[in-house]
Structure formats: C-alpha cells, structure tokens
Image (cartoon, rainbow, N blue to C red):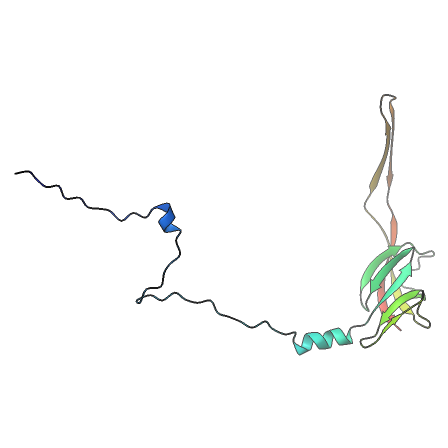
Amino acid sequence: MEKEKKTTKTSKATPKEATKKKVATPEKPVKEAKKTAPQKASAKKTAKRESEVFGVIQTGGKQYLVRPGETLKIEKIVPPGKGDTLVFEEVLLVFDGKDVKIGTPYVEGAKVTAKIEGDERDKKISVIRYKSKTRQFKKKGHRQIHTKITIVGIE
C-alpha cells in the first residue's frame, strides 16, 4: 500500500489579496463615514466682516491696503519725526462696514491718519556689474530706508 500524502495549504495572503478592500460580513459590518453638512458662516464671522473698516491709500508711488491698528512699512517720509501724526489725503477706496466709496482717482473728504514709529533699513542688496574678458568688476551695496507707521483711523 502506498502512503497517501496529505497536503495542507497555509493561508498566507499574497500582496494582491492584502490590498483588497474589506467586505462586510454578517458578523462585522463595515463602518460608514459620517456625513456632515457644509457649515455656514457663523453670525460672529459675518458680523466681524460687516464691522471691519479698511481703505486703500497711495504714497511713495505705491498703494497700500490699510486697517486701523495695522503696522506697515512705507517709503521714507521726510522729515521723519518719531511719534508725529501723519495724514494721508490720497485715499483711493474706503469701506466703512456698509458702503464702499471708490474715488476717481481719490475719495473726496476721506483721510487716513497714522502715527510714525520711526525709520528702519531694509536688508542689504548687492549690485554687481561685470564684463567678461576685460577684468571689469564693480560691486556696490544698498539698504533702502523705510518709515514704519501704525494706522490710527480712517475717516
């Protein structure tokens, strides 16, 4: 009599079987993801937007979006009196929380007041002029001076 060989299969998962999605069985149901409705903007956020006041001013050939209490750097203003009050009359746009006033080019009667905090120097910029094959090389440095201001109010 010949001995019969019993073959047993081991249940090792192949890489393809390991990546298959789990199927719900009666004993273990698959959990569903919670569905949430998109949330609307809360009343606090909309109230904050309505009460927000901002304006756009022009100084030093640039335009700046300003809000009360905001600190920003602008081109140097002469004379730089630290602690002095500065009034910008070149106001391009004013939003007072309800209405938007757009100037053509400036809004009449609008003013932005600011307090001068002092002067600051920007990072150094290297300017290099170089001509090949003639041994000409010039290197200069430059630090731009800015005036730091804090916006006090918008009228």
